[in-house]
Image 1 (cartoon, one colour):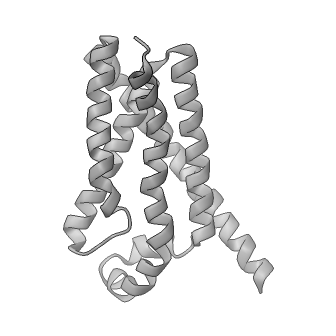
Image 2 (image 1 turned 45 degrees about the vertical axis):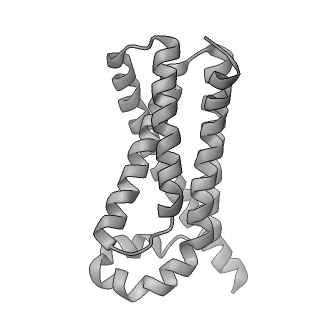
Length: 175
């Protein structure tokens, strides 16, 4: 069932993703500098990894993920492969929930928390709407969500490698 609302929900996903990640890109460096000592004390191993990624590197990683989301949205519409799109949206929803857990543990603002609630509302509504509109079955939805999580974890690993390489490249060119 393809109507305007259906197609709009599919294309809205990459837009929601970018709005959410804009918050992270814009506030990451400021927040990290402000919270650096506290973060190093509480989470030294994690912070050492993130110190290797500049704002430009992080933006590159986000850009790559955005392109993947655009391809998935286009594929869903053109070929009616809704399960991969749905699995990707479920993966994004889990990512959003992780941000809430991070915020609850840290007990202070973290970049991304402001856009989490609208993104969760969109995600739940879109998942429900697509399931109902396409008469999707739960088991394939779960299986495609697992496939999507594996793909995006591998992609996240790749994106972080690219981000660190860009950061090192810019640091060597700027010195």
